[in-house]
Amino acid sequence: MDTRFKVIFLIAVLVMCSLPIMGILKGPPIPVEEPAQSVSPAQRPSVLAQQEDTMVEIPAGEFILGSNQGGYNEKPQHVLMLDTYWIDQYEVTYQQYMEFVETTGHRLPGPPSRYARKLEALRGLNQPVTYVSWSDAVAYCEWKGKRLPTEREWEKAIRGSDGRTWPWGEGRDGFPANFDGEADGFEVTAPVGSFSKDRSMYGVYDGAGNVMEWVEDWYVEDTYRRAVKPGVVRSKPTSTYKTMRGGGYMSQGIDLRITNRSFIVPDFRDEAIGFRCARSKQDKEPIILSSGLWNVNRENQNNRG
Image 1 (cartoon, one colour):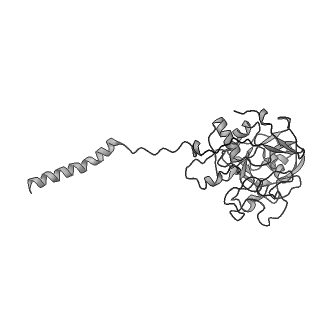
Image 2 (spheres, rainbow, N blue to C red):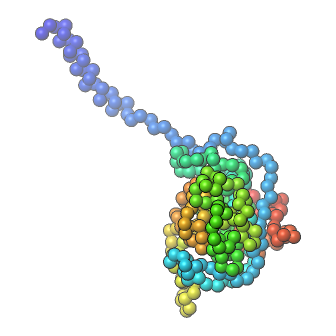
């Protein structure tokens, strides 16, 4: 073999053998860092215009909780008494939540992954805020001097006192709420209060559709059975899930009934989950308008962070 060819062949072998060693010395490629927030500050909407927070008075009295025609976790249907309380007339909007974020530095509403579907379509200023966890919802309500409603408060506010199946009564002709896909005219969530029929007898909107809503309670499957059992010691049950109530824009079938009880881990964030806030009568003397609504005095709110 020609000496010159041998030298070239030897150099080629040495180069090929050195490649793995060079890769080891160089180390693994530097990963692309995920953005800390799903939206940059430049993309945040201006929320200089202050919105009034309208709450509805739910009068003291009895109402029907649960359903004997529903799932196991909705039974038995029984009558319950609640004192007067107030609940937001509408689900908390993206604009309202962004005011909270900009004031307190709380994390932005967004999914754990940057590959969420339809993210921009869900961020209309008057659409309900989504991609918030249970603790995010709690933090917002506390900042407003409020709290999350209990399951019982939520159901009475949306169902009324007569045990109806939907806010408008019985029957589901057409699309009285934002649910069951896009046939109602909205690909995703609608601006709050868009569906006049999705309004309870007390004037609370969007209980049947738009987004499922976080409530205060830990989820306990047989909580209604515990409540009606005489002589049972009321030990606090343990749970790893928080309860959600109401239907979302993708909900179908039995999920649309007011009595349906959903649940998920409290740190879960999703495009179909939002919330509204409530207050008890003893929390603060409200300012009642002629319609029974309460406009929060923004100058005197607690916990403004």
